[in-house]
Image (cartoon, rainbow, N blue to C red; front, side, top):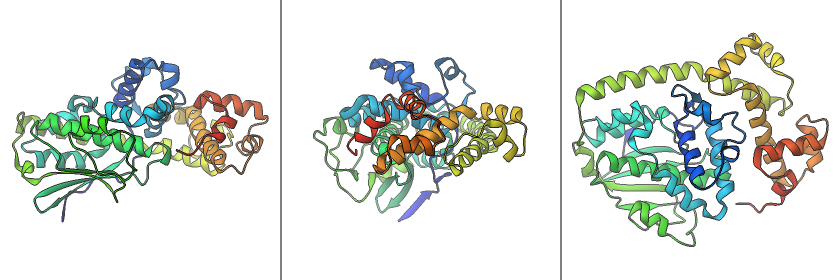
Length: 346
């Protein structure tokens, strides 16, 4: 077994363009889900999403995914697979053009792994060559459990869709998922053109290794060289700007979600509040959005244990009154803390 190339990132928490959130929002709108539902808890609106330069935090996209999962309920599997099919080569901008312009499928896959943080994936892929097979394994162990199944289906569906954009002849030889067999596999067969094996040790798709050397129909060495230079510059800019949201989030988590104010956080980071606000805007987020995100995450974790009352959670998060926490939680999730705590585990 030989790894084709090492993925550039090993965790989903990397900054990304807003194109995926815009796509998911349009997808939700087609199903009658308004902006107020799809963008809840993101500090974003439709106008900002139209900015082609907007960079967002991965957790903002995660919030949109959670909003969609809550809205579709039991139809989550088919929704995830359908959503994944909406991700075409052109969705990824210059990163996608670099892949489609690559000489062979091997080159395209190697490029995609090298610049994986220009994608929208949450489940980190690894690609290995095993004899006459290419095995693409999706790693979802670091993805939040409440959306892991949805995202592994969306991400793999998107990858297979893009592979077929690159090389229409590609077909899967085998497909496995870790989750149990669903009540119907029709949507799986429609997307993957194969019946998967469920309750397997890993989520993995297998194709013939012979496809690796296939020349791509739109290969162009000059184009791919230009695209790679632009991708390299984009990655450098993103990695330079992305740390601030993570630092603020870590600070908020360290104090248990209690909001001591942006001025205090700015002092802790040794910068002025104005500089902090500007840098968060450049990173596609805001201080208030990060406070809400951390509080929502911590609240859901505490409520899920069943050991704390709504009032206890409110106090731990720094709310003076439980009613203020209940109002905020309903704004984040569309349901009350009590109703959330009563929900059966997914």
